[in-house]
Structures are given as C-alpha cells and as structure tokens.
Amino acid sequence: MNGKAVISKDIALIGILASLCVVLGIAVLPVLMSLPLPIFKPIVLAPLFSLIVMVLLEKTDKKGAITFLSIIKGSLLSFFSPVMFLIVSCSGVLTDIINQLLFKESSFTQKVTISALYSALHVPMGILWVKFLLEFDFLTITSMLLLSILTFCIGALTSILLYKLVVKKTL
Image 1 (cartoon, rainbow, N blue to C red):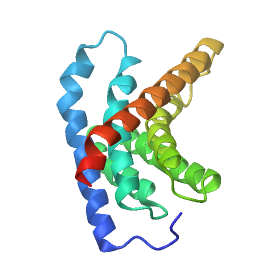
Image 2 (cartoon, rainbow, N blue to C red):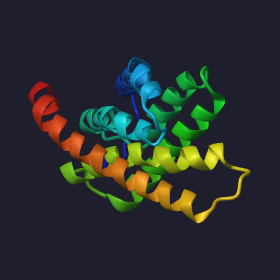
Image 3 (spheres, rainbow, N blue to C red):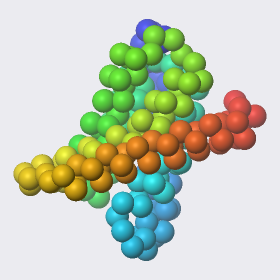
Image 4 (spheres, one colour):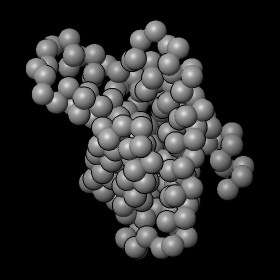
C-alpha cells in the first residue's frame, strides 16, 4: 500500500466518484423501489458501487481514500436520510481498516476483494444502524450474513468483469 498522503488530484477524483455513486444510486432508485423485497436493493447496487471503488483503487492507492469517498458520499446522502451518512461512512471506514490490516501490497486480488467488501458492508451497517435499539433474532442475523455474502460475491464478480471489459481499456 502506498503510504503517501492524499493530494488534491486524489481529492478531486474522490469527489467525482462519490458524486457518481449518488447520481447512479438515484438513477436506479425507481427500479429499487419497484422491487418486492428490500433485500434485493444491495444486490442491485453492488455492481455500481464495487466498480466505482475498483476505479478509485486503480487510480489512487492512498491510505484513507475509501474513507474519504464514503464520507463525501454519506454527506451527499444525508440530505435524504441522516442514517445513510452513518451506514455509508461506517462501511467505508471499516473497509479501509480491513484493507490496511489484510493487504500490505496493492494487487488485483486486493482491489477486487476491497471493492466487493465495501458493497457487502452496507448490509450489516444498515441493519445495525436502522435496528440499533431492537433485539436481533437468529433469522435477522442469518439473513444479514447470507445477504452480505451474496452482495460480496456479486460485487466481486462484477468488479472483475467490468474491470476487464471497461476500466482496463480506458485507464
């Protein structure tokens, strides 16, 4: 991992990608609202967010870049719901911490894993913040775990496919 500080060029890229996350999320919102179960929402958004984080990791490998992305994205989403800020920011911070603990060197595997993990962490963070004061039962915990795993797998697969099809040819 590159230990250098985030510079203004990186901040501009992070701002653009965070805005792109929000715009794509809003563009997909009518489809999400028409889905019968809310569990499908992270699955639909996983390819979009995973690809954006993959582009971020490809263009800048600075410590804290995912945290900055998630804080900016969360700030933009806080206009819709303050809980969104907490969900997105906590997902980004946790993803950055896991990235720093597990990966010392940048590689394709690292980028795919981290980009998919960012999408997958939105599920448990959402459930934790939304149901913070409620008791969890076995079904809630099991479904949260299964949905997180499914979201991670979909995010990883789309990161690999879209990276090879689109990003690698244009970067």
